[in-house]
Image 1 (spheres, one colour):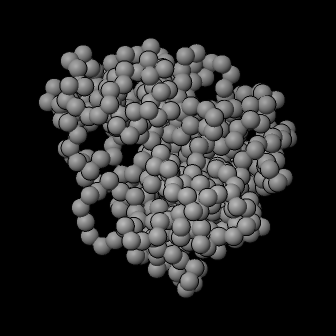
Image 2 (cartoon, one colour):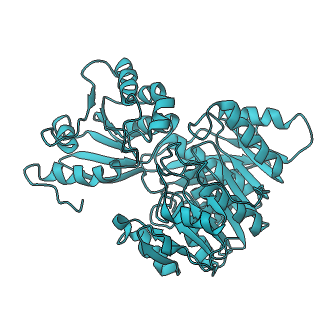
Image 3 (cartoon, rainbow, N blue to C red):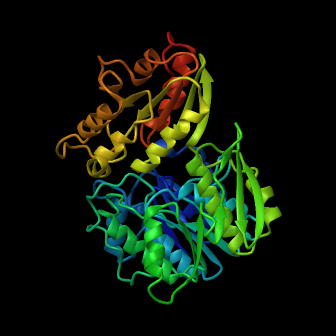
Length: 483
């Protein structure tokens, strides 16, 4: 079905990895991208891989020879290419469904990473530790210095099946059905399940997330379950009620099949110690954040379960620096360190805020751009509370492609919850306008030498870090438009 697919908005989160994997498997792939992305590194990678890239979204991009059209699943209105595909009777697949279709067509060996959220680091780490020259991968986020998808020599496939790849607003799901074909079910050789919890708008409650995780686990030959996640622990209990997949537990207690000792921070890297089948293995990995270290432990445990050589795993993971925009240090100016984060879910936000404490002895200023009206409305109180380990919080407007006011601003509830945690005078809300100070100016005023600024978000926040560094270095100079 995907042999001659057209991908809409192919540089959107999660889409590039899929496009690269398909293209490097010598499939005839066409793709459209936005005008803003036409000169981006992602667009360049797509062209180099052989993807026929067009700029803008036009009905003429859907040629008669296409076999399917894939889109990110995130849009606020009609896209002409999707309307044209529907008119031609072509299957219209969301990215998540396309990934499932890809895994069914691929066959074995297939190693999947799944979770209601928080899969990017584990999937990227797993791709790194299994990178033996015969493994390909499709990731939601590329590793620092790497790419999110490849497949020239890949016989074994690692795929991140997380639904949460971009800002989703519930507006157009019924307009673009999946097409006439039945929805396939992935049957991985090994599945690592990282989390199972509510994550609106994908899972409106935890029960829904648990059901999805359990169903995939039962469809797998082997399932790896990190028991430090409460939801995954419940999935483990569910799987014990009848025969099913081979279950491997990973945990911080000696009773787990793979026993993980608490990760030890060495100042610039983590020392990880795992016990598997009576043997003790140690690894060092240059990443920050205990939660990221545990995600790497889950990936290493999965590699050991599939029989990978521990020495080879140690060598490969030693160069793993995490995924792009995942507690990535952008630079230091005027003694202020600026760090980037792509966290969306409240738990991810809280974990990155806590982790930033270990990277400075000064104050931590968190700049948050909440992701999507739907998610922010559902999780507002949790998002605000997630900022509790910061010294100050700066709130940017909610990132959303919606252009019309759909109701109350959910940032009000986020601000209230943050104030309850941090106290008066510690939460600063950015108002955008021609007569308002810029975010860079506001942040500059509240930082001093030795402080750390953690920028969290997936919209305008992606540009804020470099712009802030420029302003810190030259506060009297106008910030270049290209930043």
